Length: 362
Image 1: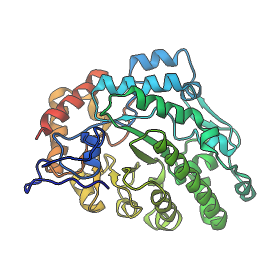
Image 2: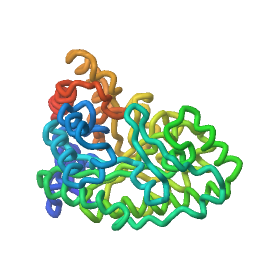
Image 3: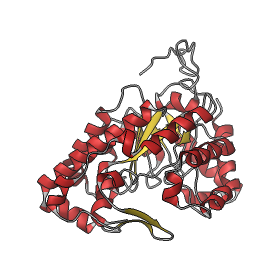
């Protein structure tokens, strides 16, 4: 991690010699727990169905087609970040794109989400999983990264991402989204050796995929463990933590890694042990409590996305509450505690970004 000399109060850098324009951005400084001029903000599902121009584009092209079209995916990535005035762009893609080169038939149905036609249901299937060559099999994602990096303002960081091994495995085994993850848990408990082999394979794939995104122009990466909140702390410790630790340890040092899961209030201390630079907090935990529990790392979060449906006065009060909980400590990145909901008003999102910047200005 690049060092930066600070004033005795820790309020402002005394100098930033050797730091690039990107490294001096509020987002990158916050990831590295360095002083910032204001609290940076970006949003999960920053580019999505709540934006009229995105809905218009989706009327003409399917979701998978859009992800596989670098020109359009770059356009969606860049235009959302610039329109909202956020402090980082996030790559437009999907966590499940990596499943196709592994050997799974993936489709996205309107109103139903992802569906896998040939889910993993037997132990012997694990040994047949293909090796993913990121440059070839996911070259369209890497091209989007390169194009977005070139198109974005010089000082605006680009965040790459991947699904975490557990969440990818759960989709592979369940065949889509699930409420109770019965098949995943049964496989994990009844076939521990096969489960370990599956997670090792996925860990290697995720590590290589994130490294490729970094090599092609991402300044930071986020690992989405969307479904891991379904596990007990004991099962997380046994069946997931060693693999998450392996993924994060395999990424280049100095590139911030954000680790985020949904419904993970009971897992925060364990997730922090995996070694990320930034812990994403969902809205089921108070920010100050979550930060205390994850320890000496940066944190990201954690406005309930439903509050974007309130009036400006109520929204401002909730934003202020979260900022007050952060207490001006270095290392806070404002975000939602989950993704932007599809029926959210763009004006509400614009107001959110404006209010965070105004209230947090040093």
